Image (cartoon, rainbow, N blue to C red; front, side, top):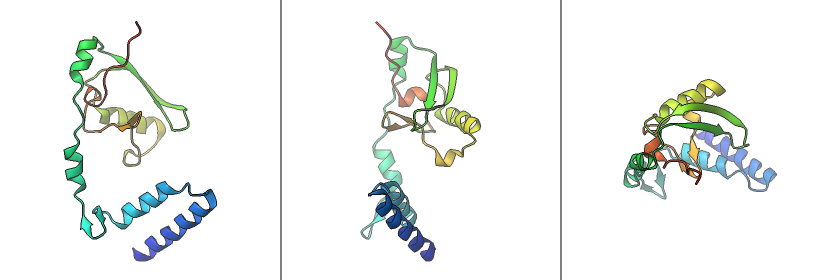
Length: 139
């Protein structure tokens, strides 16, 4: 494992030099692999506790107040290309179910994907309406 980490670190340094420092994602991944328990500077950080201290707001009531019951979901890749769309999605639709559809459509593995709305990562254990407010309706 140590040789693999050293090899990955050399690769990251080379990639960073070649791309002018655009390899921060790789560096973050290597750091996480190097330190899977979340330890930093000799202090262990409980990653699970961090997640519990910042719960996602429950927004189901906003969907009810807005009178929005069904929406179309369009998922785009970072490139902007549409990779998945689904009609008939409700605020009660599990995010995990949407992820399963995306994985099936794209042939991707769920453990390497994250579904985002803006800068917020949608938790696969929640319903869509727990993570997002309703879409803005035209006046």
